[in-house]
Structures are given as C-alpha cells and as structure tokens.
Length: 472
Image (cartoon, rainbow, N blue to C red; front, top):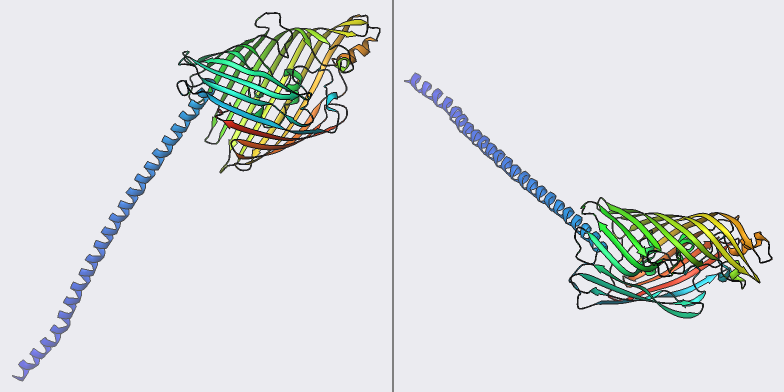
C-alpha cells in the first residue's frame, strides 16, 4: 500500500513539467507562425511600393519625352514663322507699333572729322548727332492682306545735322502660300547680307553699328528689290537659302539709271539647338554691286571740294555666327560676330579747284567685330564689343589737271591707305523694367582716327502698340 502511494506521487511529480513543456512549445510555434506571416506581408508591401515607384518613373519619363517633342515642334514652328508670316491672324486688324528711340551722345573729338583711312564713308555712315537728339524712331503697320500676302511698312524719323528727317525704311509684301518652303518678298526692305543688317536698330545690343557696317554698308543697307528664299523641311535643323536682286540706289551702290538688279546678293543660313538651353546659327552671304557714280565723303569734300565719285565693281563677302545660351533661372549669354571682306575695282574721279583728277582704284578691305552680352536677370544686361578695320588699296593716277601733286589728290580723296587701322572697344549696360522699355548706357574708346575719341551715349527705347517678334 505504501509502495503504491509512493509510485503515484512520483508519476504525478513527473507529469507536471511535461505538461508545462507541451504548453510552452505550442506558444513558440504560434509566435513563429506570426513572425512568418508578418514577413510575407512586409515582402508584399515592399513589392507593391516598388511597382508604384516604377510606374511613377515611367510616367515621368513619358512626360519628359513628350515635353521635349513639344519643345522641338515649337522651335520648328518659330523658325518657320521667322521665315514666313502666318496667315489668317490679323487680316482685318493691322498691328501698329511706335518705337521711340533717342538719347544723348558726347564725344571728346570733333564728330564732323570722323573718317576711316582708305575707306571713304557713304550712305548714312557716321556718328550719332552730338547732344540730345531724336534717334531712329519707327512707326510700323503690318497685317495679312489676304490668305496669299502679308504686308508691312515702317516710317523712320531721325535727327540729321540738327534737322528732323522722315523716310520710308521698309515697305514690302511677303507671299504666304507658296509650296515647299518657298517665299518671295518684294518692295523696300533691309538686305539679308550678314546678320545684323536685317535687324532694326532698336533690336541691336549696342547703340551704334559696328565699324565694318559703317565702312562697307553705309551704317545699314536697305534698297528696293525682290528676294526669293527657301526654307528646308528639316525638323532638327534650320536651313535657309536665298537670293536678292536690288535697285542699287543706296550705298554701297550708287546713282541708278533704271537698270534693275545693280545689286545681287546670295545668302545661306544654318542653325539649330544644342540640348534644351543653347542654340546657334551661322551664315554666309555674297553681294555683288555694279557701282555707278557713287559719291563718298573724303577730305576734299570736308574742305569744300566735290566728293570723289567711284565707278566700278564692288564685291562684299560676309561670314556671321551667333550663339545663345540660357542658364538656370533668368541668366543668359549671347556671343555674336561677323567678318566682312570687300574687293573693289574701278576708277575714282575728283574735282579740285579749276581742274579734275582721275585715277584707277583697286582696293581690298576687311573688317570684323566680336561681341558678348550677359543677362544677369530679366531686367539687367551688360555687354562688351571689339571691332577693327584694315585697307590695302592700289591707286594709279590716269590724269590730273588740278595743279596738285598726285599724292595730295590721293590723300584728299580718302582712298589712300594710312598707317593706322581703325579699331574700337565698346562697353554697355542696359536696364529693361519691362519688354516695352529699355535704358542703355554705353562707353566706347574709339581709335578710328589718329587720336582716341572717348564716346558716351545714353539711349532710351520705348515701344508702344503691338510689336512683332524680332528675328533670331
């Protein structure tokens, strides 16, 4: 009996830890199942997040690609608009604008004595009137005439020798519906020779023209004639070629006797974009001029004698290049330059006192400028320009009844080479509180003559009305 009770007690004591171990084992298994379930849920959540990130990246890439495609299309459209006006916008509502331009100019040398050795000035070349004056102020009206033609006329007012002069700067018609990128312009217009010549003065980055434009184009060349152009149907590149036939009245032409096409100009322009922020354009043009009785200012004219008169041929070749970069924000950089090479051959006649002189003239002159404009923000810009000229002329006297030495006649004509190559540094800063107004301060150290001329200009440009976009 006693033995039986002892065995029962031993079995009972042994069963207590076994039951406790079994319960604890169940709890551990349950915890492991819960941990495994949490792992699976976590993996699913991570996979779901990764899929959402991937879809978001794909949508962003598609949006960026669409934006770039749209930007490319817009750039292509803008190039086409520059080449040819758009039809249907304002057929019965002409755009009318008035650009007020004037300011103050001061010089340390006499502006009436301004000249280049070996390159007599012609046309409207020369310094801006000293003191306060009205500069090139323009009144422009433009509209689509119908679905076939676009018309524009610009009247210019400016002060010359203290008097207000009015002239027709431009009055031309453009075709709108010729096929295959072809375009035709006829009337009076600025020639497509070079880069700067087609831009109106209020769109220039400096207050005055480069020295080469003063010497070879009379400041800026416009004439009556016809232009035919073709824009290539290329999406990624702007390509334009064209030809002009002009009357030849204006410098570098001369007196016109009714022969149309005294001036012929061939030109080509190529440009495009580099990335989203930069663009470029290069161009070349070749102008051939049949000169008939072209008068030009010389020392003889300055001292009361008649102007020397040139008859012959004048050929001008121009290479131009422009680079524009838009940095982050509102900062931008524009680099621009042109090289002009002129070759002239003919005869120069000069009357002096009681006699006349006639000499053969074979001249080669060149000039160039390079400028950079940096825009700090939407309102402020600063720029620097350097330009230079040189002449290599051969003069041979044919007849001289003036009683003066041949060397004196050559010097008085202005065609004789000098020992001094004209050159100039110019710096400017301008402020544009809006797209309709601009104030500019410019300083130039001009060494066109033997003595340095310190030039200061304060310019205002104010635009009223609907003014169209400028060319590239």
